[in-house]
Image 1: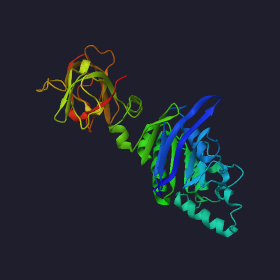
Image 2: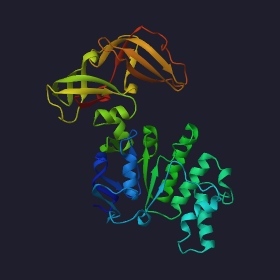
Image 3: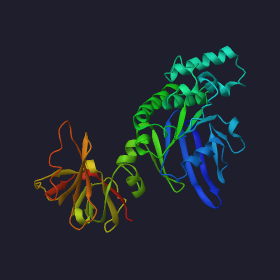
Image 4: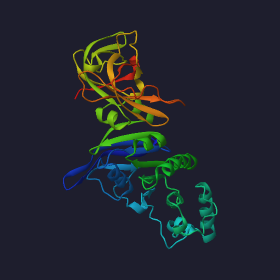
Length: 366
């Protein structure tokens, strides 16, 4: 274990009735980083968070926080605090009472606690709210109070279980930015659980993508999006088009692939993970595809199809193109750049797709 890592999870599994909710997880979380556990419902992310908090004991393995094994440490003695989705605000207390609730046995005087409350209210941008009742707060303000209550004890790690899930979309996006700024200002390690990929990418230094109790990939937001290492991660993070392919040749930093409806594909490669003859999956993001109504001059990394339906979303459009021999349409993203999308209503017209050599991600075959 390194001093750089405030949390180390070693071979942790958690079973419920023989079902592995968490399956042999190994993770290191750096001191002062915003780290997210991301995955669909039932993937084990909340169970893993509860193991960190001490609310669940691992069936196997060990959790270390700041170098100390946690197996014998009860939740209330761990250097962590937790924020839940439902806020858990006490309706009979005002904001000051809610924030100071956990400080009653801190040994501080009332005036010292009140000063700490005022300090943290300023930090969460709610100065002057100390005397307000819980019923007078909006959803976003209640979440801020819940955060303040967790932060006032100055834990080494703050655990957050989908804390923005109950907020409407616009407020949620605003709170994402404010929560990220708050984490940077206090310098505390945040471990954040979410099923929302956009939320995880927006807020996190690094993200662990989970499925069926396992951690599939840990990387920064750009790494997960641009360089997924499995079909699941590529499909879960953003939108991706997939094609079965076979490696036909490799050399001079490029790989030649036969990819069915895409035809001949030439891919820029920097490793030799896949040998000639390997069955692989060719993956390409919608925004990496270029669409034209005239045939490009090149004959590699080009596919001809016909225009399918389109979705105009204001700032961008999603176009769907049918390629010969492929039932599922190919998604193409186009930024509208201050103008109406041109040609998106030309259903059934012939179109050509093209892409750069570095636009393709190669994944293991199914």
